[in-house]
Length: 142
Image 1 (spheres, rainbow, N blue to C red):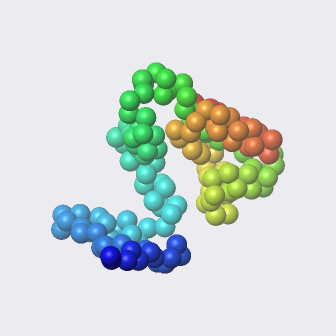
Image 2 (image 1 turned 60 degrees about the horizontal axis):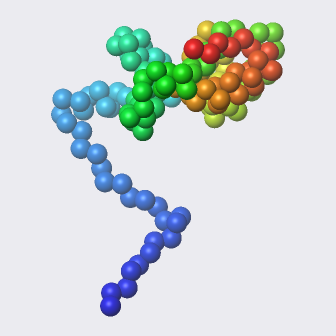
């Protein structure tokens, strides 16, 4: 009988290189050179330009069989409308809740009003909103 070899859980996973079509090569190179903040800004611009949401794709995938009204009621978007007087506490709360770096969290808070997270489960969105309001921010659930 053949033996089955198992790889350790911490073994590095080798991914096959992705073949980029020539017509997208320049665009992919430009995206690779961007910082996380620049990519975030690009996503926001594309969402506004084309009236789509990057988060909606991830949410819509598994819930494709659900009724649209039920999906709309069970999800919420969290928008920071004002940082309030204790901006540092709000930055810390955003940093922790969204697993961002300090600079990214500060930029989001400084750029208020800004969408923090879209397509969250309603309960999670309310918990995030509570954390932020406890820190002194003004938050809107949409």
